[in-house]
Image (cartoon, rainbow, N blue to C red; front, side):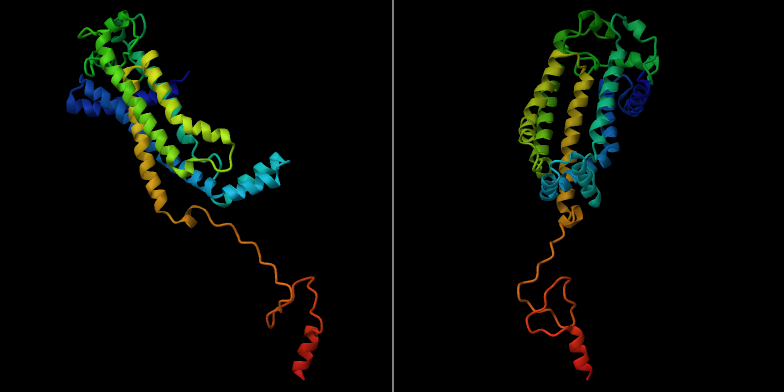
Length: 321
């Protein structure tokens, strides 16, 4: 059903493996690990533009906070009018309340597709010979056998901490023990959790990432996310069937997010404020009571003439004489 996701993800990973396999050897565990790392970097490169749009939209939303608050007050009883006025204000500044969400949405299908492809290398209940006799989406049978034999510091790339012994025996080549897998999975899970914490903490430190004028609960949730998400990553890596390569994907993705945020934030900081959002138009100043109009200026509609002032037409006739 999701072959339209599995084939592109496996193809990109295969192309990177062929490149690194030519340099390090096709059966090298490092070549296979680098193919996963550069799969992440490829996806990140494709999502730079949406990420820039999202960060710029966050800055615009924060700069527009006073005007958005005024709109919420004005249309407190009309949600539809509030939504239309909010969208119009964002369009005026070349943004959107949902701009750049594609960068976050598109990463989930890639994550799911990679997890499925990695687990399809070693199918439950299959022997090494059975797995190595069939293709795995874009990977030919000989590449499947190479992947199963490859080791990263003694652990297969598609092994996880709680993998049953019969599946560990189906990798072929050097026998694999649960202790060897644990010595790779545990440090990778910890590193992935630390990288996730750093990337989320930096994102929360960016002033544009803090919602202004929004519900107080959102601020508390964002403040807790740098601790909640790493705990989820750590629990997923240690308690759930998360392969070694998937932990490598998490760690690389978190590092790439951190570097991307540093670079894009620096670029946004260098831009002039008026390049991000135009200032609100200043309200017209009301005339001071008793102020005389400038020579030749037309009186304001509805303005009362000063006591003793002559009409403008009478003044022009007098000057003509």
